[in-house]
Amino acid sequence: MSEKKLAIIATKGTLDWGYPPFILASTAAALGYDVEIFFTFYGLQLLKKKMDVKVSPLGNPGMPMPMAMDKWFPVLGTAIPGMESMMTMMMKNKMKSKGVASLEDLRELCIEAEVRIVACQMTVDLFDMNPADFIDGVEFGGAATFFEFAGDSDITLFI
Amino acid sequence: MADFDSELDASGLNCPLPILRAKKALAGLSAGQVLHIIATDPGSVKDFEAFAKQTGNELMESKEEGGKFSFLIKKA
Image (cartoon, rainbow over all chains, first blue to last red; front, top):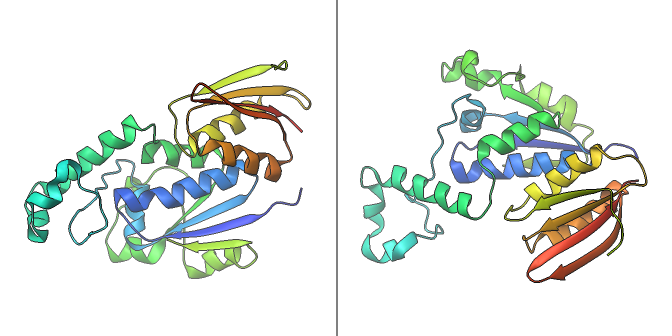
């Protein structure tokens, strides 16, 4: 079977948006795809050894709020200090109870499946990020590095 | 129920974990051996069909019994 290729650009650094790249990459790898994820801008948060990503109800009207909280809090209420941490905790508990893997586990599964992980060098420099904070096995590269793989991939996703 | 060589209980796990665990379990089998998978994720029914189609492993059986889904996959 000739190997298909999947190239993903991961640009978001929140708990909810961290799922699509890791779910799709790990599943594609299980289906026999050769996979690369290019992490840029806020997506680089997903590569930190100590991943500290949150989900925010602020400016996110599609987010289901537990305990009818959306009735009690007007939109501005979602900006109350501590709201983000609380929602993140609730979301993590909910995911756990529904058997949804943690982002860390999915990331580990991607690495086990030999998904190639590339960090955008420009963003690392721009935000003065320390490469030592990233998990092992991360490669660093730029747009041309992405196209080297994506150029002949079957599927390319921007997330 | 047909015979199987190995069993994977993916009960309580949600997408994409049943597929990922099955892939791993199949890697430990040799060609022609059969893996029995139990799952509770309703999405796994379509997903295992798609998995079999794309990996070439044969989905010999797919059924539901008492809210649990059961699959037999023969390694190609």
